[in-house]
Every structure is written in structure tokens, then in C-alpha cells.
Length: 323
Image (cartoon, rainbow, N blue to C red):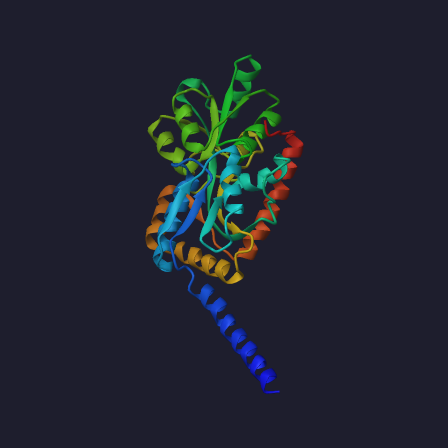
């Protein structure tokens, strides 16, 4: 009897000690430096947004956050790396529209879009502008159609296969009934460099990176890919005004590997939401023409689902392939 009581007492003590240890492990998070992977090259909007948010989140959580660029394969390389990382709350990835596009466009992804990653928080959104080099002779959508139908070989750059800029270019081709060669890059920065150099004809890109080039005359803005005139560029006509029904943007959000505890997801979401109100970030977003986006992790999950459905329809209608 005494032995049984001793065993029961020992088991109870072990359980009592084990539970607080598990709780304390999460409560102590983060106990070391963290990492956010950006699946694009440095210099683009995703990289810019991630580094701004990481700086503010680092301050509030009291730990260093290292931003690491892992571009390639339309963001699949970087996303897959995080999907296969330990679910301990120390590795995250910033994704964009391509994350939702790839769910339909790429038949054999190395990760399951919905099962292998957890939405944490939506962060920012940048409107797209369709631009060209000043010497292209293009100023309007009608000019693009006229040149193509006259036999001129045109090309359009994108951030990579499956990115929002890729889909926007394919929608343009379909609606105008013309052929334009798609030239994918490993991010917006190298694509923009070739557009500025005249190596490609046109490109859909994030207004924050294109604004100074448009204002300086190094690029010509054909139109904003928005339903109505942008508050960031009210003097530039929309593509809708030019009878081209193409709306395009780049959003950024944070994901974690599946298996990361709910408490950590919630705390990271709260830290990101607080970062969006930091004066330095607010000022940088306003100057850059980036709209701050916040919400719960559940709301971001719903947004991702809706984007997957929306892009699947675009891919089907435009008969877009990953090649």
C-alpha cells in the first residue's frame, strides 16, 4: 500500500513538474535569435517590407531577427526551406501572391500549401503599375496592341514564374489578343534593372520601386493596375480606363512551419500588428506607397484561401503554365 502511494505521488509530482516546464518553454519564447526567410532577391518590396517589420518586431520581442534571402523557382525554394524547418517558432518566411499562385500553377510542389505552413500575419500591399522604357514608343495600352499587331517583338518581365506580375502579363496578352514573350527573373530588382536598360519592353511592378523612376522620366507609366485611381499616383490613368480589365498588386504576409504552437503564432501576430503602428514603419510605408495590412492569423488564412481560388480562375482562363 505504501509502495503504491509512493508511486502515485511520484507520478503526480512528475506530471506537475512536466506541465509547467512545457508552459515555461513557450512563455520564454523567444529565448534566442530568430530568422525570417525572404524567397526573393534583395531590393524588392518583399525584402523592404520584411526588414522594416523585422526591425520593429525585434525591438518588441527583445531578440535579434536575421532576414535571409533565398530566391529561386518562383519562391518555392525559400518557402520549402521553411516548411521543412523545425516548428519551434524561430524560423518564418515572408510570402507574396506567388505562394497562392503556385498552389495551382505548379503541379508537384515539394510542400503542401495548406498543411505544411501556418499563416501568421498579413503585413503590406503594394499596387502595381505597368511601365515601359521611354524609347519603346509606348505610352498607352493601345500602343502595346498596335506594336504587337504590327509585328514588333515585345517582351514583358516578371519577378519569376507564378508571381503576380507574371499573371498580370498573361492577362494582358489574353485580353489584347497579342503575343508577348515572358522573361522571368529571380525577383523584382533584376527585372527592373533590365526594364530600365531597355532589355525588356514592359513590366508590371510595385509602385514603391517604380515611383522615382517614373517621376524622373527614366520610365513611362502606361497605367496603374487598379480598379480606380491610386491615392499614391492620382495623375496616372488606370488600365481600367484604357479598357484593360487587369488588376494586380503584391501583398506580403508571414508564415511559420506547421506545428508551431498556437501561443507563439498569436504572440508573433500581436508583435507584427504592433510593428505596423511604429512611427518609423508608418512613415516608411507612407513614403513608399505601401498600404499596411493587419488582422488575425485566422483572417490571413481566409485571405490566402480566397487568393488561391482567385488565381486558380485566372490561370484557367488565361491557360497559364509554369514554363
